[in-house]
Length: 80
Image 1 (cartoon, one colour):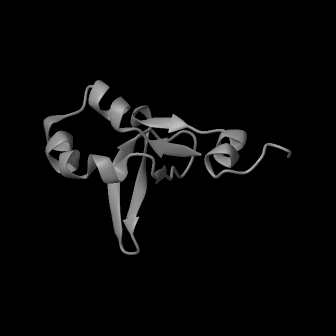
Image 2 (image 1 turned 60 degrees about the vertical axis):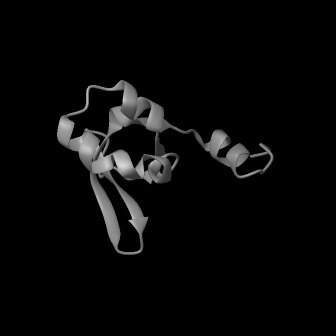
């Protein structure tokens, strides 16, 4: 699972139009799931509300969260 990282976004070489488009939403975007169609795709999409999506969200702007990390973030124990 990939989640958006505001810090990785700020550290990457983003195009000016990405900065303008996303800058007002970075706090809301931080930590949200990003969905990629396939592992070969460089970018995916993020659902912001029931009918609003942001695209493209580049893989380099995301953290790859493993299953055990997901559970600990949700407050569950790691007894899988």
